[in-house]
Length: 156
View 1 (cartoon, rainbow, N blue to C red):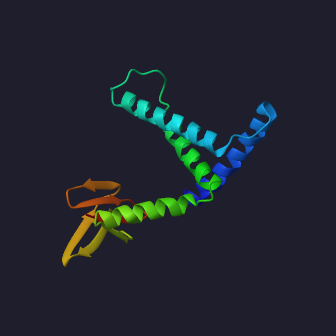
View 2: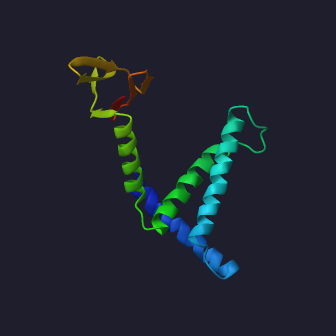
View 3: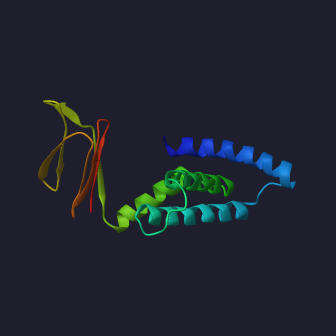
């Protein structure tokens, strides 16, 4: 799912909640109230992450995925309510961080060879052949995510 779809679906859901707020409280939540609700859920992501790592006593059953999804929903809602594009916000942030860390991202379409998913890239005059399906590598010089659809590699 792309971020524009996340934004559109989030907006539709938020509109339904606005209707409930008006029905039960006589008015919609303000942007500030939405921001506070996001912060509450973001804090719960922290606690549930600690729980998943065994660093906090468990109080509920596997809510981490739900709260991460809900936090993304709140971010999409806050972006829309403040006149920002979630996709543009994320793109700008990632571009600035890559530049600050001097990362270069290469995206290539892998190919199949003898039953393996493979990709060949050249970087700084060095040829690199990478293979295997659903492989994720992390070293001091590159981060790679390879699957059947695409490969993206970031050199830092």
